[in-house]
Length: 114
Length: 113
Image (cartoon, rainbow over all chains, first blue to last red):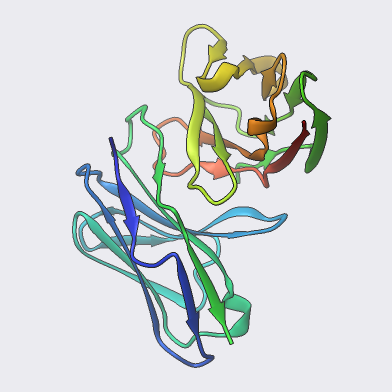
């Protein structure tokens, strides 16, 4: 069974801090994604990666960056955390383009910025 | 840009009632369609998917969905809901060949015992 593991379920940080959210998948998936989930807004894509060291912006990349140095790991970085980045963050992975396989999601990280 | 609309944001039902959640999308080409469910405190998981073939798709836990191409719709149904179906439901659409699905805003379903 596919496992997508996010490093923390809950995280509390202060404004201005640099925050790292880590995600690891164990199924050799090419694609990895970071979303934020807010009530009434559904899932909004922050960044995705289709290969090691490759990344593309999603719908709401401002204030975030990502790193993918290894195929199984995709990190989301909040360069200088702000209160409006308080949210639930979801990581997902999937096989490459053309595949008919769905995404697999982690349990999420609930991040609070004080 | 592709968009996905879920018309019902909050649905409250009693056990044994029938369920239909609407999903419409804007893309006119080949699509892959998904319904995901997020139970309280759990991760999103796949309920069912459509790629080709029979437009009536059966998923886990008694759910089914029908792809109606002419209406750009992929509605989720269940004939008789249970308290354990209380969850948030997301429709997602991926245009053919794309890496990235577009998600609807989700529907929160509460089932009273």
